[in-house]
Image (cartoon, rainbow, N blue to C red; front, side):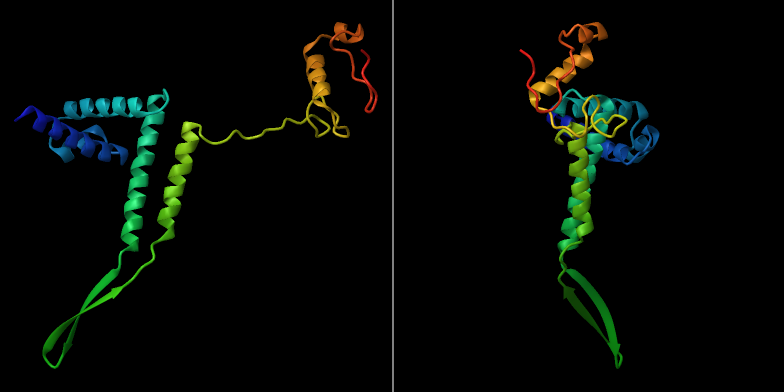
Length: 194
């Protein structure tokens, strides 16, 4: 077998092995389906996993790479199903009357099953989540009064005041008592001493 033909045969076998692997088949089952020995499948899966890791945009661990490959596979299947659901539905019926048989063909247009597009959207959303492409989510931590920790809910603070509150939180009690960096803020509406 020519070297390029051999490479092509290995690539095709690995593609089939990947399909079975992503469906959750064991290595022994994959070897039986493809008619080769289990050690070959072990090597193929190791090569596939290496390829999946190398093709990722970031240095993901092996589990993330496998999950991304599964999502890619699932998305391809959803697209295929969507395209099939858009094809015209053709039904053929046999009608018999007075000893003669007639075939009748009926064609009906379809507009596609939106459930398949919802599946594609789920794949895209999950992939963005795994890749960390979603915008950061705002999280507020509240204290016992229901407002942010260290800030009284009934008052609006300027940026400078918030920085000072953070400095207060980081400084020790001795600095606060001596009027150092951690000294208390004046009441609202009053200027801070220079």
